[in-house]
Image (cartoon, rainbow, N blue to C red):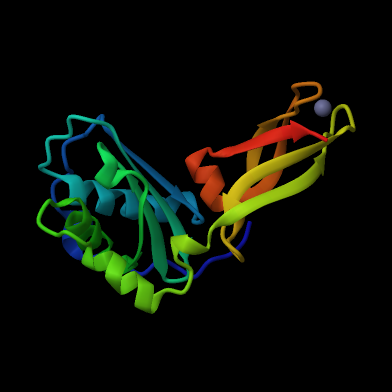
Length: 185
Ligand SMILES: [Zn+2]
């Protein structure tokens, strides 16, 4: 496991307040940190959506980038299709709320991201890596989108030759989104 700096504490209201009502249409995925650090992040996201009537499914993927979070929102309509921005941890909840509120034409979080975070979503590129299946020993190629220097995680992949479930290291972003594929080589 890679080690990450300890998570800074969240504002008190994010952890000590009443738990937001469960929202079945809201899916939160957090990567790059251990299980204990995920809970407050998930809570911040759910707080940002608290009080909203979610008619359509939303998903929020968060990948740790140093002291910030790379956030990808997917919600209903063209406007919320794979909306990516970077937010510092202490204002994660506010940043998400700003982005999903209807008031802002261009999210200020995204504007701030372009000046303060070099690792924006624009640098994501197609990555292809060769692996060898541990069962049948044949080669396969795993394809996904990733950013340079992003952390990797072990992800389950079905071998395209023998369909054994094997684990390969791929970029955290792709692991979170479940967006990767394996081909025969
Ligand atoms: Zn195989």
